[in-house]
Image (tube, rainbow, N blue to C red; front, side):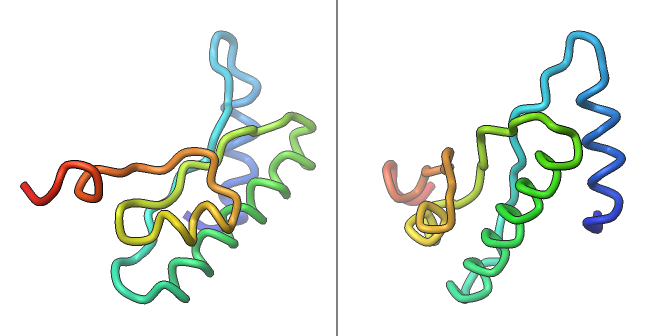
Length: 90
């Protein structure tokens, strides 16, 4: 989904009764941490732009997994998904 599609979708979800838009989530491509950083930074900037457009706070950014969570936290993650780093390989 492109940035332009995110704005009307966020607005529509935020306008729904009984639904509270609170977060955006992304998973970066595996491998290059510079690419992951760019992905996480882009989501944070998109979140900021959406907040401005819909005039509501989206307090959570869910981004980062076992291989890139440090970079995600540096880029503003409020929620990370850690499995392998805590529990080992399957």
